Length: 79
Image (cartoon, rainbow, N blue to C red):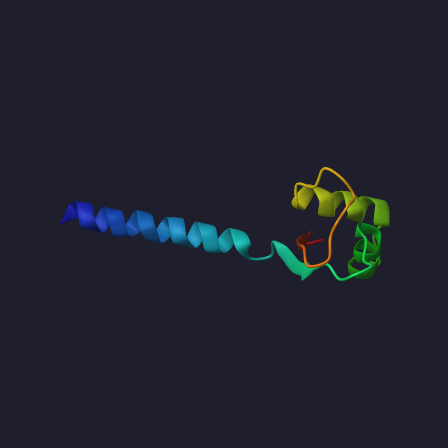
């Protein structure tokens, strides 16, 4: 009985940790034809230097280059 209670408690904590970490993480966008990291950064972060915004997007998505493709989904980190 104690094992079941402990297992339920641990499972609940793990679930809330995963769900909680996704809140405020940012916004997912799909890349449209003709878009670049620069255009996405300029549009979604108008008050930020686009160079910093591009860097942040690349870092959040583990991108090694500036190349993105139509239909690709990108995570835009929260400011």
